[in-house]
Image (cartoon, rainbow, N blue to C red; front, side, top):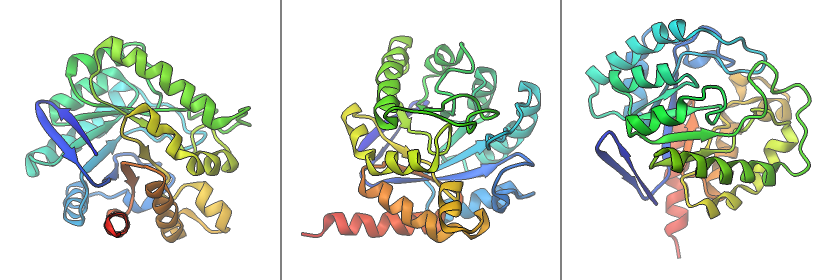
Amino acid sequence: MFAINCKGKIVSWDAPLVMGIINATPDSFYKGNLQDDMLQLAGRMLSDGAGILDIGGQSTRPGSERITVEEELKRVLPVISSIHQKYPDALISIDTYYSTVAAAAVEAGAGIVNDISGGKMDPLMYATVAQLNVPYICMHMKGTPGNMQQDPQYEDVTKEVLDFFIATIDTCTKAGIKDIIIDPGFGFGKTIEHNFSLLKKLEVFQMLHRPVLAGISRKSTIYKTLGTTADQALNGTTVLNTMALMNGASILRVHDVKEAKEAVTLFTAYKKAR
């Protein structure tokens, strides 16, 4: 399907990848992956089939407050260094919108930068990623985590998100970023209806000829629709992950790697059937 260059290592895949979420933060909306022993969690995710481990030190749940660069560095660098040392072949992404954190994380062992702001919260991010020569996950977000869910409005959410990527990919390319992965940003400045509309029309983003990441794991679109909680949203997550795969997602960003990997395996077998 795609190939990306991660610090000189070519990573290619012909079936969707699973990205495991590791939260180095005390206030994630889902407590299941808040573990003292993140090295053990990383090992389990890799054993379960994770192709990427995504390390984040800043909560981006709706209404969350921004922490400083210094605090984020304290949270993520020891985790990245430990995982890189224990599992040197593991592909690690750093979930940050600070260019300083991105640079330090790549030096510590990360090979991908995952920016929820799409470069809008740090003007140095594009140039930094280009200089680091690593892939860039560019996400669409309306507003900031602090205010993004305060009545987000769109005339046509899919068209507006698509237009954002067309413009931003051009800017990233001109800045020197070679590998760009796009993330429509489920739950980031979108209502439940917006999220379902994006999921239903996800195939539209194939025209950009970039890997598409779907990050909908245990989010409120699932548990509010079902009338449950994030802790009870695993089955709903698997259902929507499968829909994302059917509509062209190349990467699933999830809390539960084993179940997502099973969805990918079944989807791949289904696609091969004649």
